[in-house]
Length: 236
Image 1 (cartoon, rainbow, N blue to C red):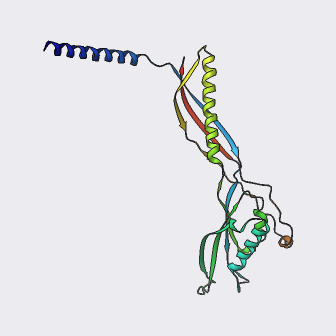
Image 2 (cartoon, rainbow, N blue to C red):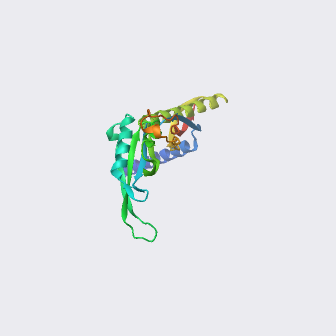
């Protein structure tokens, strides 16, 4: 019994000592500095998806200009621009019946949207100018991408973290302190944004179908990739 009582007393004393040490450690606050670093870079997108919607129409209100005719013009224009056949795909098909005054609809007119994938917009104007302008309903940039965006994101985040460390270093040096190891790192998600800038269509002339394809000098706006990193460092 006496031996058991001594063991219990020893255990209680050890527990009390551990608790006191924990309280002391808790009271000793870690000296640290919290900073935020940022980095950014601009790149041109290298994959642009342009939608081109063609529409059938009635020529002189009598003859329907068929979709196959318009599609053939588009395909030839794409080939003349030096783009592959695979760069042009069908995105959507729709249609409607044509009404004339009080008469019942007599003609079903088809709309067809194509997606053209290009590396830049240099030849888009030349392509569109080789298609019957009455057969073009609309064009639009669906989306644009940068093929090495994953690698670029990593690079920018590292630069942002390095900027945070550099800031903490010179701030502490200014008050005679020394930077220690990193305690915490938090990523501030920002990603990238860009608004497309599309070149205006050139004036169409009768000679455009046979003249060398013109190239636009206006391209999409650069993609700005920007990230912030928050970090805490120990003060030695």
